[in-house]
Image (cartoon, rainbow, N blue to C red; front, side, top):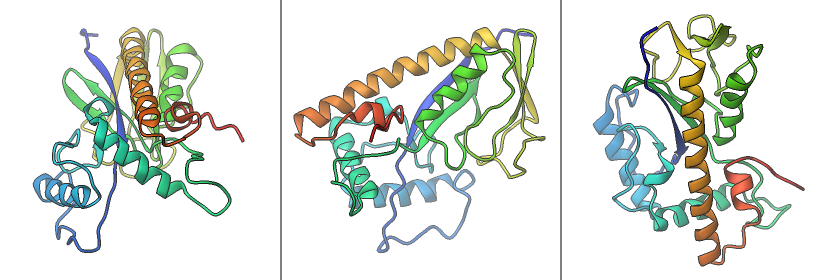
Length: 226
């Protein structure tokens, strides 16, 4: 196998809609990126985000944590508090992680994006793949690729997935084979980025007196304790 440059890129979903902003007439977003980028930017700015907030892929609702400014992160936390608010708890009591997940990139090409229902806690799925050579279960939302462990490599099969749905955006290959060592390095780098993001969350929480308990443990790692 040729040497691979493997990256695992954390992304947070910021999906804002506004009834006063007209939806693009064309889709999906990856085919009509500019139309959807304009729509997302308009909705985001109405919701208080800055014009500097830029998606990982133009037109998408996925944002790299390190690209989110201090002020935009404060706004995102306020949006998240409102989303998770209910009558049985106070607004600062959050109970679930940020939606989003991880983009698998090989040799500079985006291969797999987070799928429906994926979130930041799915880092454990990637860890399990590299830590357990017997592991053949993998989840990154639905659909998720079928995985097979082959010696020191991991094969991702995008055709024979357990849930037969279309990947969004479409995957450019039927399957990819990745060395475990290259994926391990990518996972470790992603985990370091999560640590940095956790620190940023804690700083914004502290400096703005939001009072969110265990903010990083919940929003990044999903470690909710009742």
